[in-house]
Image (cartoon, rainbow, N blue to C red):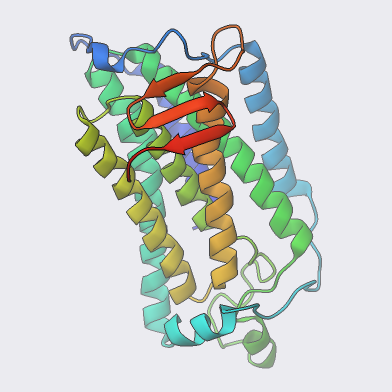
Length: 290
């Protein structure tokens, strides 16, 4: 499954939002804090432009015809030798599992935490804000990752083997120069970052412990997906680590910096919500665990 199919799932859930209504009594624990910055004209325009740019980069930005970077760095080769599956059947199952986990991760954040729970608890406005933040973060992380793998042109781990034997892997000719960074890992860690940001600032699951578990569950899904991308021999360890850092950084950072810790006048707010304490939008202190 391509990363753009995963992102299409996000878009489909966003489009479904206006069609969903809730008759549940409003739960004040999920009310949008008036000190937070709601989506405004600039946010809508920027998200649309970034989303269009990411699509344009994916479909129209030409990558290299020959690899600009081959082989592993640091622990890449030893981790590949230790973890990758060898049999075609196992590789197929592992890759399918990574696709399923990726879809589950996105559906968990975009569909359940950001849509179903707020609507069921009577807060359509909060659901809309969460989904818009999700779309904003996915647009940014998609653009960053797409430009990187098109420009870097790193060969997949199996590239050298495929050059010697075209039948080495069933996916020898499937995006052979799109190894760095890992798109699947970027998607799932963007979803995990968003989930943790939302659970930090809103009592989505009703208690601090439950919301810690929600964040932890999303990180578990993301980590498992990244591991399966290595076991399935589609990415090196370094591809997965960089994809994860970009994804989580954008997923957690974008809503926290631009919405949860900014006021309606677009000025930085000093606030303490749940386990997160911030003095500026760029200085975050985590006073707990997740």
